[in-house]
Image (cartoon, rainbow over all chains, first blue to last red; front, side, top):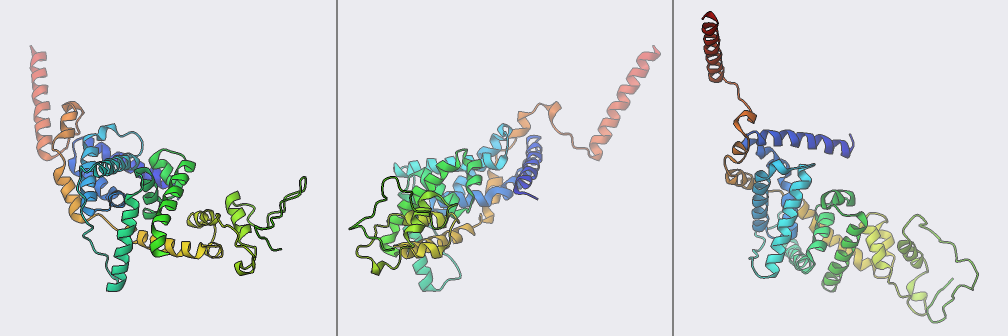
Length: 186
Length: 154
């Protein structure tokens, strides 16, 4: 089965669940939460760098989605992705203005030797710092391409722009990150 | 053929540019960069060629268009491949992260009650059939039937 066909099937299944929720079955919404929380959480984590903030963004986004569920037109996954992506960008704007707090990542990586862990944590901290210096749109493109492993075509579906524009954003993000990190790691 | 940038060899006016040696299907920037790296060992050149094409090669490699070996062969490519391999390994770790299970429960508990019950009028809501509903419906129909029969008898 092609990925487009899988997407159509998935969209039909989502539509069924949405109908049940709109007819008053609040519990049916959990199907959508379980189905889509992981990719959305990874996006929020990549954009904010903080598990606590990512969890909060996920929660507020799903609540917003639940309240406005009758307004879904087209694919639910693309619709809720845009809610989460906008929430992440708003949070980044606020943190740059100093209106939000930034917690450290409190989930250590596992199965590494202490030396590897130390080395990796240092790289993660530096990478996080370098990502934080990027404009939100470049960071978004980089996170979707490298952290979430999405193709340019998927990114186009979710962000509603062109492949050329996305390639340019990813290129500029890579260039900036390489400049920021190569002095220390090259 | 050796190249250096002290005595450059521009093409003669009107002459054809040299044919591309490989990678005709690749984007022009990548193709130029690949031709650039085919010029022999760096130590043999009088002046190192300015290699501002490495980013194009790195881009092509990161997008899966060429192999890491090709990038490593270019000037500065070795370092670029190393640093991006480390960044990609870190990204790989992030890619395996999943939502903590308690977050699902937290979201469900935080959903406002009755949002969608109130948004639909009673006649558009789904009816759940259970024994009690059936008995009530049957009694109502019987009552209506009896009332109609009495009206007709008069």
